[in-house]
Image 1 (cartoon, rainbow, N blue to C red):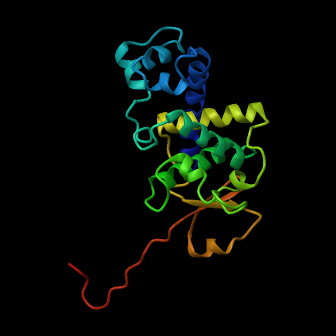
Image 2 (cartoon, rainbow, N blue to C red):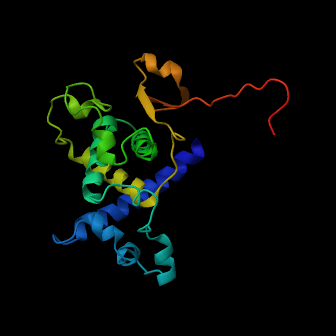
Image 3 (cartoon, rainbow, N blue to C red):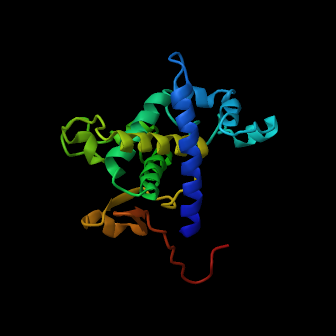
Length: 219
């Protein structure tokens, strides 16, 4: 876990630096997300250093346009990014950086899981279409205004969302699909395998299926 935390902090620092550049330096005609996925990204990265690295080095550092999550998300990348950042903000803005990465990881793990919607916005908004307090993430269907109020926390959430989408950092939850606050004990958690506790959240995934075999082992 300590090694994973160290890697994530490096990713967080790099992602925050690049997010700061693209979010401040792009023109109105192009969004930061579009700029990041463009071939010009190596030049943006090069501007972060005093001495511009060789082209090959810049290419190596650049978030690849074909990164794992970018190819799996909905067509509107900016909308998907916004949904992910909002989920990080409302679910974990009071958590440490690692805890915010963990919430982002669970969100994307659900996108990849066949039993959940195949887009970030679909995952975040699941279950809240018709009734209050019936959704997967409570902030989405609590009837309150979802506009972030804490500018610093909102900036951090957007930076982390950017980092997980473009850099695909290690998953601190090791594939978790569920979590809950440590001050509650929901009944559904008994049927799952606890993975880890990060900040005030406890993370779970499906239990390993152990097949009982009698007689000879199957070939």
